[in-house]
Image: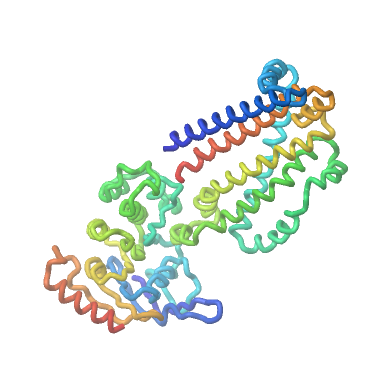
Length: 249
Length: 246
């Protein structure tokens, strides 16, 4: 069952990829201007310059994005779980979360950079600051959505609070946490791009902007394709992880 | 023995207090199976939640063998109408959950294997609850309760979600295993038939607020081919009269 579904998904992804390439190719033929190169020229460029010019940027971006997601999960999920399970913690922190959630945190970038410098820490803080809210709120709501009855068997067995967490709260909320992570990923890639246009010489954001300044459109497109592919790979990895962790669904 | 004295439970609603149980007094003998019958909403389940230590807000006294109810100290098996299985655990993990929480050895010993075999779920151990039928899920819940070797077994309309044929099968299967273990059992039901078939004593509840109307010795208990006998018919008529008078 799971295998069949996965196959369908792969076929779907392949069809859309082919469709996008055909569309791109058609547009490049119709306009035939340097700013829209043919996809095949771009793929050729990727093959030529990936190892020499792009690889280092990919590694930097990948590190930042995985770091940002990891920190957000490690901080956000436990916090969300505590808020979901303990009414008092929720009452204390919810107003804070709701008050700060709509603040456009990207606008805080100058302040963050002044406080933490132009380096990696600022970039990590930016990513975490923006995606952690989605993860906190989803984790909290996932715990709150667990039906009261689910806890009854364990209560009658005299289970401890810790056992409630390990036996019920964590496994019951994991699917939602995975979904939140997937959504956060899309946001994280956008923020990554933005933060990499400042104060760094490594990262896909830098590579794309730099190619643009140098009017090297083939390199620029190669960067965009690679960045998209990177996002797609992490997305798929989360999908596969979810399939394993939530196989009971 | 379970001693319940002047047990009163009130639920705080939005505007008013609702009385769920009103001065319930009863002693439940060790090794006996008591069926509690009464109309829905009469507080039968409330009684069960008090006994299982889930509901702590009550007045009166409830003790098991002279000690207060404490799920950490006592071994209480709870079987609910919706089976109470954890969907992320396999059948094996679900059946072992009780002894895992109690920190016993988690290996499949002879007794556990015997129970699983008796309930016919020994071939399903790797499955998840969603891959089982309702009857199979309830077998898993029963296995979990018996593997725990409980001091007290609490059952809240465990078979009412099953179809008629599966229900009778499960009643028989349950009674078989119960006879080999004789755990003190409180069995909640709204079916006269089930109360007669499974209870050595039958407790009749009044409609809300729950009071005990009568405690009956059940002469039919442990008779073979019960459903085809005259005693069954006579007792059934008597019981129906008490319930409807309530």
